[in-house]
Amino acid sequence: MKNSPPQTPLSTPALEQALHAVADKVRKNDLALGRECRNYDFGTNNQPFLHLFHAPFSLCSHKVRSVFFEHQIPFTSYPLSLFPKNGVHSENYYPEFLNLRLLGRSPDSMDEGLSESFSGASSVTQEGFDPCVVPVLVDLKNSQVVTDSLAICLYLDKHYGNSRLISDDSNRASEVESQLRIVDETPHVALLYGANPDRDERPAPMQQMLVGIHAKKVSELLYQLSELGSEDRHLEPAYQAKIAKEKSAGEFVADPEKMRVVISRTREILLQLEKDIAQGDDWILPGPLSMADLFWAISLYRLQWLGYSHFWNSDDSLPKVAAFASRAFELDCVRKAVIEWPGMPPSQHTQSLLN
Ligand SMILES: N[C@@H](CCC(=O)N[C@@H](CS)C(=O)NCC(=O)O)C(=O)O
Image (cartoon, rainbow, N blue to C red; front, side):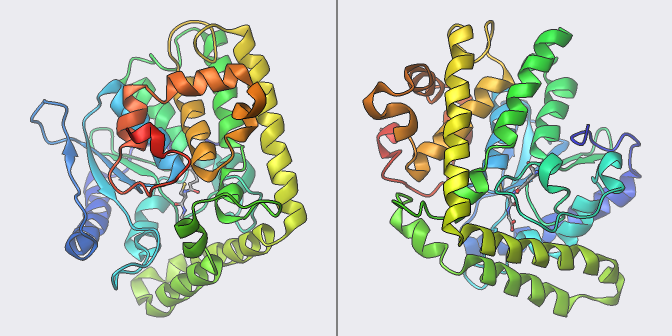
């Protein structure tokens, strides 16, 4: 399974050094970005040993934050700016960040190249390993770096949540995990970066911000490449792979036919979800709340944010999905980690959920 973290603990001093190299750099930017990096200690008053590098609007970060909040696992939060802002370059492209992230590349993704192409989703199983993305979890207690949102969620649940959101029962665990994979393979990235060629309903400020975004990302990557010191030359292939991926993503989302395929694929995924919920009761799977419910809540919230909730809302088209969404958007962990998280950009499609 490609979502497994490295098994062998890393050397603690090397890990602490890599962690502080990124943390020190991003802390210097906090003032310029008006950003609060803080400890969520959930009343323990202990210094958390889990450190999360993430971003306010990143769907992969939403999944991880919701698991942290559902289990009330203490963590130190470093929200990164993924786009250049107020004179600060994209923080996820800093060499210090790539060095940290590459420490967490799982053994089963080592034999494959870095991700260079774009399918519309962000699943590591489909796309391969991207060295320049959030979230990244650093666990100083177990000396581990975990780099994929699904892997991080499974890791947190297993090590710090008594497997409550997955289950100790192997049949149920595999049902939960198969739902997690469906969400992971839903083309959320294409739906964000690309317009619906027939009716673009993404919030206007986001539409404007995304004009020429892939070229801007490439220029940020070229900037970091040009500034690379001799000690970081080993990162050149990682930057080159990301440049190739961003060029491919830019071409993908500019192609109306590809976007139509992505949209109709999303609709099919939701039709299947309707059938799956019909087998259960209140949640996606029968029984207690599972990680599948959190992932689907986050996926549906993103789709609604982007203007795609007509898939389940219009003319009572998918009533089970609609009922699930209303219930799931009330979950405390989803509200705290996603809907009310500071820095989430507004959307006219989700405004009513904030009141
Ligand atoms: N498979 C990875 C994908 C991570 C990913 O694509 N992260 C996005 C945000 S959701 C990102 O950091 N994008 C910034 C970029 O590509 O420059 C995961 O699930 O963690």
